[in-house]
Amino acid sequence: MTWSTLFKGDAATGRLPASSFGREWMKAPLKVGAVAPSSSGLARAITNGLSASDGPVIELGPGTGVFTSALLARGIPDSRIAAIEASSGFASALAARYPAATVICADAARIRHLNLFGVPANVVICGLPLLSMPHGKVFRILAGSFASLRPGGSFRLFTYGWRCPVPGAILDHLGIVTRRIAFVPFNIPPAWVYELRREKVAE
Ligand SMILES: C[S@@+](CC[C@H](N)C(=O)[O-])C[C@H]1O[C@@H](n2cnc3c(N)ncnc32)[C@H](O)[C@@H]1O
Image (cartoon, rainbow, N blue to C red; front, side):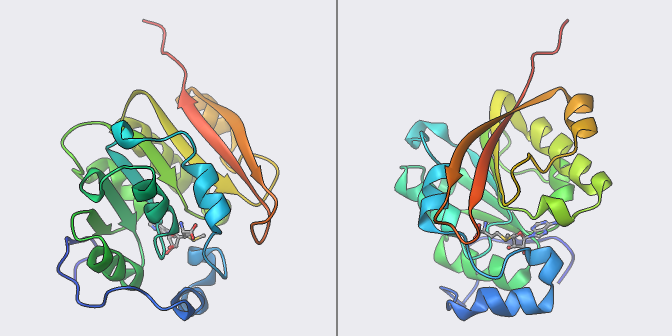
């Protein structure tokens, strides 16, 4: 398999067992960044207010697909969802579960080079462990995501810390403003949800 493999409904593995998240975490704890999937409460918070008209949506680091399911529950069809996941185990299971979605097994830092929909996305939902990544990678993820979003599009992330996990210098350089939009106390651990938008660049 090459480093970037497109899975589109051709994987045979289907739904991942609950234990798979812990298994992936044991293989690469820093990369997976959590010992268990996010709660349904966090999934509802990070997708809050989205509806069928908010596609296309890009999901970064979907894992077992908790946020993907929440996007579908909001009415966004799987054909309007593209997910970028570094773990081939997670990616192939997600592709089998959502055959109409575009699931790409790749490093999200490559997002700028992946032709996902051919049109800009409205929303990026980020499940990546940004705090454990080098700043250069975080920069490439943010810059590439905003290049893939329509002007005014929304980038949502969650964090277990009380501050936005994107370094201030990156936010300033890219002209991004942040807003804390939810606190989810019953997630393990408790989590904050942020929305990032790019300020209008003066012409
Ligand atoms: C904290 S888990 C979140 C999973 C899921 N979104 C959730 O909330 O339950 C982080 C996910 O990001 C994936 N990941 C980590 N680094 C990545 C990268 N550079 N590119 C794409 N996916 C990555 C991991 O494999 C894992 O599935």
